[in-house]
Amino acid sequence: MTYRLGIDGGGTKTLGVLINEKGDVLGRKETGPSNFLTVGLEEAVINIETVVYGLCLEHNIVLSDVKLGIGLAGVGREADKKIMTEALKGHNFNFVLDSDAYIALMAATEGQDGLAVIAGTGSIAYGLKGKVQARSGGWGYLLGDEGSGYYIGKRAMFEACRSYDGRSIPSKLTEVVWDYFACDNQDDFVHLIYEQPPIRQQVAGLTRKVAELAKKEKDTLAILILKDAALELALAATTLAKKLGLDKTEFPLGLIGGVFKAGDYILEPFKEKVLEICPKAKISPCLHEPAIGAVLMLEPKLDSEVLRKLRSLKNEE
Image (spheres, rainbow, N blue to C red):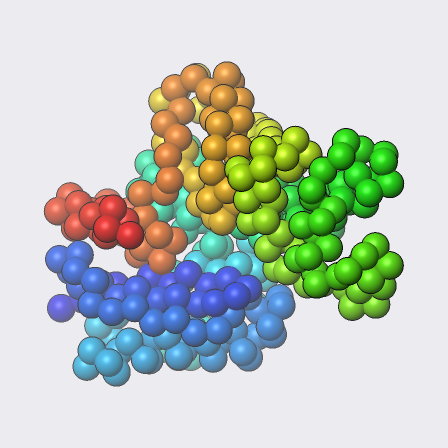
């Protein structure tokens, strides 16, 4: 029997999902990060190995019977993809490697023409039409990542300071930001930010606080920050749809990432703007989790019964 193992590796964790030929999920295993640009090549490879060998041992499976679909953050550029490919050679892996954006696209479209918009700590829109792949965004936190968790968190920090000064509208955002960073006042906040700069994931974590403030308090400034992020994500999606010639056609547009969990203050302006330009877009959460997208990368045209089983897994989450 041939088994398929989909791996979703990022800057926080690496998740593997093992399935058999019938589409039954046999096991899952999670380890540390595998973005080699942030944790180094050795640690990234070790974490991937831990997932692969761990699942094989747990289920008494011979490695030669396993096909690996591996989607990783940090391999979006061909040069970086080549580095990781070379690092994985010699491990007797039968694998296909691509970016985390591509497996998200597979999770959204199951290999059909369409788009995925990813908005977690960073952001990117990735699309496929025929054999043509394209992207919009994904430039990283210094050059872009508009609409991402980091973008929202950074805006929240800026606007908290502006509101405190009176350069923006009154808001509870200042209090929320101070509290998030365990600061009593603006002096503590300034000292912390410049002396112990928060990591990107910590800044992105502010997204949840901004969303709570918008939902519970109807705070105008928090709502504006979320709407701005939504419009940036919509811009990435519609720009990409036009580039691929999908804007006048019906296509799936899958959403994935923690930013979309902020709810209607993100989703409604995003959908409204996308449908204004791409009226036939079918916007929904991705059909599958990214690790299953990595499996679909191996064989996009899986048996219909297998696909049905895999879709049901998402519905059970």
